[in-house]
Image 1: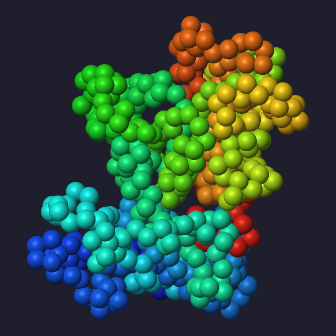
Image 2: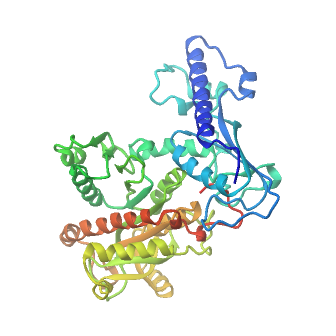
Length: 483
């Protein structure tokens, strides 16, 4: 299309508007702290502290084209808008999305002032403002704050109503929702949000972290590696700064954080992030709620499970192709009767990665890699309800049980992030093989390295998929344009 849109200039303007709003807000906070000067209500009404707004106007003379990709599509004429937080952080993502749209549709792109103000806590980090002695209640009276009424997932969950808004949503997450999650991510993971990479591994055991750190440090010692640094809670390790790195990281501050993250970074942000989400569906939901605003390319669950079939052995793999959602943490926003489909591109990559890493042929790998339904439960002691549990397992034909995988997959479905699960059988409670300390330690030493490397290789294969990774299975009939 011959549109008169200068996307780099538009993104520059968006960043400048955001920086100006943040500077005004800091200046106003400083004035209030010094002498009690309150911000001018008229200035606030004019958008002094507002997020920038990205706008697409689409009024075609012909029926819309139908690009093969699953995102950056305009299904209906109209005006599409979204407030944008931290535009510099999202610059590459926004540029990619807008370039697709500008190329395929007759659109007008513009940047303006949104109706949403930047909450004051989001401009304090790293600043020199002295607000001691001033309560948060007092500040919230005169400055914009994080009001939950303005933060939600109505767009992602299909609750958006055109009758209530004259414009259509441009993105799944607006600026208040994004900033809320960016702040939570730093709190939960102990790492800067701009260190997160676009390919994500979730695990539920700290020993996977140890193995990931070993892999990352080894990669950084390779002078030809595409990776440039390893970000961990409390530190950043780069080429030439790796003496005793593994020991320092193991002894570091990661224990202070609920779900510590580790980022093997590249200049383009297409490296690997590993998050130790701990045990349970609540943590799994929480971390996905917040990482989703970063619009990752894919996330995978790699962890341990209980094997439910007598033919399985300790150390075998389970590639989930369906989920029985007994986690209950998402039932209100994504009812259990909504199917969570397997993503073909991810399933294929996981299987290919298993072949490559193990070195086994297809016949050999079939003996230790089982596809099937994974049960995710919110009851760590499900074994104590054997009669009820056994009925559920029989009816679902489940082959494994854990406490996170279905939640991660459901969140991927909900937030349009390609997802997959590869688990390793660590015990077989139904068949008398319990996870006892001695057995567990031997299993960990033998299985974790290979399992993690399958996950890493899978992400490498998915990176090669490009735009084709993003399946139309995850898109609704009335989808916001931006991925």
